[in-house]
Amino acid sequence: MTRWQRYWFDDGGRTSAAVVRIAIAAAVLMTLQRLATLSTVHIPGPAELYRPVGIWMLFGHLVPPGGVVAALWGVAIGATVLMLVGLWSRASTAVSFVTAIALTSASFASSASWSHQYNVVFLAQLAFLGARGGDTLSLDAVIRRRRGLPPLDAPRGYQWSVRLVQLAVALMFAGAAFHKLLHGHFTLHWALSDNLRHQLLVRYDLAGLPRPAVADWIIDDVWRFRTAAVLNLLSQAAPILACIFVRRPLVRALAGGFFVLEVVALGLVVDLWNPHWLPLAAAFIDWDRLAALALHRPATARPPPPGWTPPAAARRFIIAFVIYDAITALVPTLDQRLNTYPFSGFPMFATVRAREPYNQHQPYAVPGDHFEVISARPPDEHAQRWIDHRNRRLYLVTDPVVFRKRLAAILADVQARFPELGIRGLRHYLTIFEAPAYPAAAHFEPHPIAIMGELDDTGRFRSALGTLDDTGATLQPQNLDAAGAHLVVYTGDDPTPHDLPATRSGDRFVTGPIAGDPLYVVAIIEGAPWLVATRRAWRWE
Image (cartoon, rainbow, N blue to C red):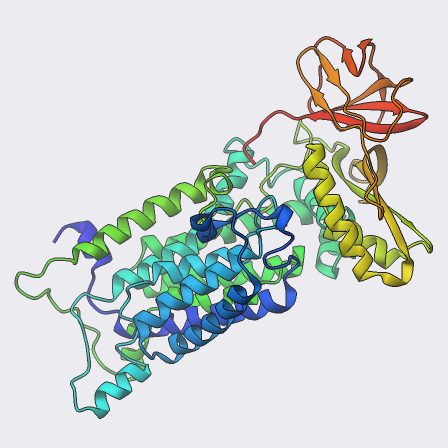
């Protein structure tokens, strides 16, 4: 046997495969429960915003009917329960995966991109397809025993599934650590700067959310937030050690402990609670070795049967999965462009949110959203925070057609959510949020710089969103009188406007090249600032 074959097709793993089956099924059930009760998007969402994700790309832009979605829920829950108890184990695992991944993919069909809270569960389940997870600790094994048949114990038929699941789980956090190092140009700039302070500001203050006690304790002391950042890198990198030292059960268990630690830390520090990830820690435990110790049995490896060779299908599946998972996990932005959910990178807070030089304390600014509600009664602080947080990142949409559709969907959503306010319309502002340099108290000062669009309940849409090229900007005013418009520009996320000299021809303003990254071109129309266009250099994010 080659070293590669010995790694993947090692002896043992029968009990581990069964425990991992149970753990994955539990994680999928917890995911479905979370998707049903905590999802912040609709399944499948407004038809005009539908974007097929993952498996739904097979059906083009055909929006799944409500009856199909309801049927998927029933089959997904039923098949996952069968996987949990080990009845028709291989078939129920496959059916559970297909139906559950269809539901989860559909939950992101109204978004420009997906979030990463569910991917690792389904990557683990995908890695487990074809596994002999029902040969023990299952109803399949009970039925076989009652029929008087001998128990199944396939030589070298279990470890490849367990180790592939372990790799899928460990690669999530390893990829996250890789992206953080990548953004710091393979230095420790991500950790040894003011980055984590600003990450926490973006996570909480920018979203209008209260900081938890741990984040509040970390954010205002340089030693605390830099130490926490270093520990974060270490705990994210550690689980991959289990894939290197696969025959060292204590090392694997320690790596699994770091996985659990990181899951809990994400909840405590950045309020990303993902308890459905925790069952996946089972992949880091050598359950066969543990059972042998508990029963005082020797854990001896058996030689392969004469003439034995690894199954060709398993070999091909391993190679394809490892290559594709590694590429999508490590190449920035490739996962969203390929759209093959659940394969994904995990650039968790990977951007270095600090200004150079990183060894000095600098102010920090970031673009964001603010919604002004046009209503009979103004929203209270809670409602305003909810609206701004739920609909964050709309400022990234600069196509006026798409922007109008999204603003219409948001207006309908907030009208249904807050009927008591008598909401008649929404006005969206591109806003620059500026944080003072440490040691000043960590907080953001909002600077609304331009209106991106305004929509009322009659469907009247007002916007100046247009285009920007190397020689100038072109307005595309909708329901605005831009005859007296003049341009200003904001550069480098500095909330100070600068006049932009231009020669005008109709709605075209010839400015010549405009320096700055990022930059925001704004038209002053009847005294109000309206965004025309933005430009930001492409970055690996």
